[in-house]
Amino acid sequence: MNRIPTDPLLLPPQAAAGQDSSCPGPVSGTAAPAETGRPGGGKPQRKSGIYGSFLIGGSEFAIPVTSVQEVVNEPEDISPVPLSPSYMLGLFNLRGKIIPIVDLRSLLEFPAAKGQQAGKVAIIEHGAHSIGLLFDGTGEVLNEKSAARVEFKPNNRGVKDIVIEGVLKFADGERLVQILDPHELLNLEKLPRADGRTEQEAAKSSRGKRRTCISFQTGHTSCAMDLRYVKEVREVPKVDQSLFAHGCILGTANLRGVILPVFDFRSFLGDEAVFKLGTTIPRERRMLVIETAEGPIGLMVFSIDSILSYYEDEILPFAKLALPRSDLVDGCLIDKDNRIVMMLDPAKLMQEPGFVEAAKSCQEIFPPETDEGKAESKATGTSRRTFIQFTFEKRFALDTAHVSEVINRPQELLEPPFSLSFVEGIINLRGELITLLNPRLLYGLPPAKAGDQKVLIFKHDDQKFGILVDSVDEIIMTTENRVAELKPMDQQNTARNITEDVVGCLQHASLDGQQNSILVLDARALVERCLRAADLPAQGD
Image 1: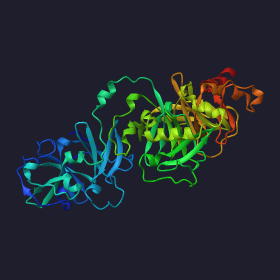
Image 2: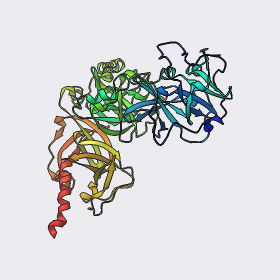
Image 3: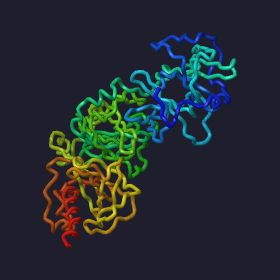
Image 4: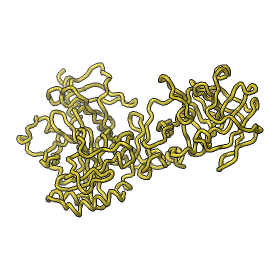
């Protein structure tokens, strides 16, 4: 059994012996020889008589040491899974492996603990399956030879009757230690399972091309989708109630002459909280537009989190999630904050029968109203480009191919010993030092008003830089023909030195149908301007 050096499983025997060892489960049974195992259901035969003990309140529990992989501190970041059993706390990342955590206090019907003291998590596994069991603390190592063993027979009185297989009686029954059955714990109903692929097998696969996805909140769950399959991300437009409004379909929206059904994605995934049409849509709500075989649909999500880049082999294998629509989940990604993000399978989403049927009905009842709408409906086969629209004084866009991720402005920055006016500071991003550039100061614009600023991380040659912006507004999916060369500078109403670092102009329609011209910034030109400015003092010497 592997153990964390700073958290040994062994504690002095008196630490557990003085506890009140009352048993929440049945305490009657027949004594059985230590070598006898409880039969049933492909369960591995009991071979070891050595147990690790764990504590919940005043009760003590035992698990065979052969089933305990290690013991870790209760993680700070646990990702909840909607519609999971009450005893499942969620998922956490243990060195690249996704582990579901079961709160044994809840499972065994103990009263809620008083205070916020962190517990211990015992990682148990069998084959490809692993779960974490949350206890109050660790006990000691026990030898079955020193105890009388009492076996329990299931009497269908609930989950705890199944997972507790017996009791170890020490000192003529003065100390009772309940035995947990690892096999039954690993087969709890609706518990997430890892699939059969090992980490070593995943590591052998070719990394292939680096992809970009957008992560978002559906309510209680963080999800992500490959940006190649998202046509557009924007504020939720006005949603009209129509004959389509039923179930998780909120109604229809007019997107530049194309009528599309709008789904409450949170409700579609089975979350209990359902958005009601007529309620004021909060500003942070966003709509992802995806293309089905019969036309576009809109998915209303809680909020947009970030842009993440990833390789295929970074999608951790994880199947049979405790989700009503687990078939739509391809695996899990770990984001920059070590949070677990459910990676959705875009191909399955685009083929979802409910989505396809609603899109087809919309196209039949509401054909595109304008030439632009007709062009939008036929844009699937054309060359597409994806941009991040952001603001510093004015609206700009940056091709997502040049952006590795988007993060919040760190509260603390490293200050270099000598700094240029446009260098905001140094970001320590997961051990990598990144220079943060402030384009407002670089281009002589007024300082930004107080607010939640964002940082676009991009790569220039072999070095990463960050651009500090006031806000990230939209993800724009468009076609090549909508990106034009820059108009003459006297029509731009923009400082000349900014236009020198702009490579094009993006035509994009706002929610009210007005055409907007958005300047496409050349991140490489911006960095080169900074490098030239950094050389100026040396040239004057």
